[in-house]
Image (tube, rainbow, N blue to C red; front, side, top):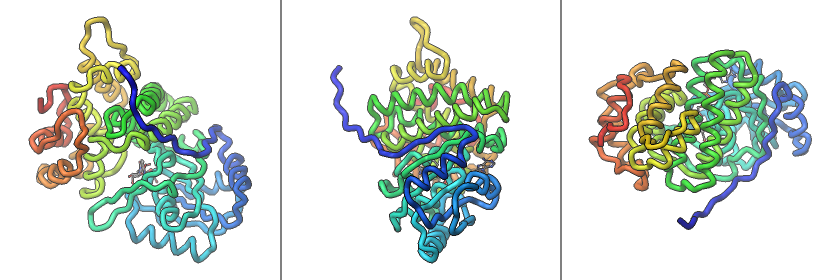
Length: 367
Ligand code: NAD
């Protein structure tokens, strides 16, 4: 079969080094000749941020970080940047913190250096998100792509195991969704599957040894690849579902992504058996001769979830059966027409009902 695709690779410096975040950040600030740095970090991550910014002169700290970036918070951060004549934004934190820096960059063009402390991956995308009136709006703009990312696995050892697992599975969801998202191509599929391989090893490693740097570093690496693949392939069905659940029902981002992923895989895998086979292999369960790759992939993911004690019920995060009709309506309208399986109200109702109660995802769901 011939190949035909149009792939864009985003330009950004990526610096890895466990325990070297402070020196790598200082070098990056110096390289950019920045004089007025605004450090963005929530009060919970302030100590971590002070440590990594220890060799940088910070003109102003901004700590009002709120998940899903409410417009009012973005406006306050933009005003602080203007008031202090800021010429570089340094974000230290998870996706919510990176997202706030991106919101400032969107309207001001001030470059961002991101120091991630979760595996969400926002630092590697040119996607921004803002929330107002129970609706999350996202957009793509190269101004919000951080100019540089400083990865230091030592900054993530404080992330509790449960949150680490959820965050890592959020990254895994970026990988899996990138296999069939609207602009999926062989390059972002290759990156996504390498991300799956890294995360499938990293997360059990973190559960076994939360303070260990090897699992943490592999999770950052996998999370980065996941985000690069996602930025290139665009939002698939999984992402659209979670976007509605987060923006409209205020469900927590990582846990929601983690819970929904096995159900979307079970829904889509029957239509993409070759990709399912590659996914199973990346999850460490290569498909045997004559074996059906679809249950192989679904089963491999389910086993990983069991081993990790992963999130499995949206009810645990505040969704109720009464919310499902509105969610379904919003999701069906937002779902990509290119999804490998047609997206119907009945199918999404069944999918959300299963995810609400933690019913085991199987590849026959709604088919
Ligand atoms: P988060 O940033 O909200 O962090 C979750 C929790 O973890 C917070 O309580 C935070 O204080 C805590 N935390 C973070 N780092 C820690 C550490 N090292 N030790 C201890 N606690 C720590 O959650 P998230 O899942 O990282 O990010 C979610 C947000 O990012 C959502 O708004 C989502 O939409 C956005 N996001 C955007 C993109 C994109 O491409 N634009 C990609 C992924 C996520």
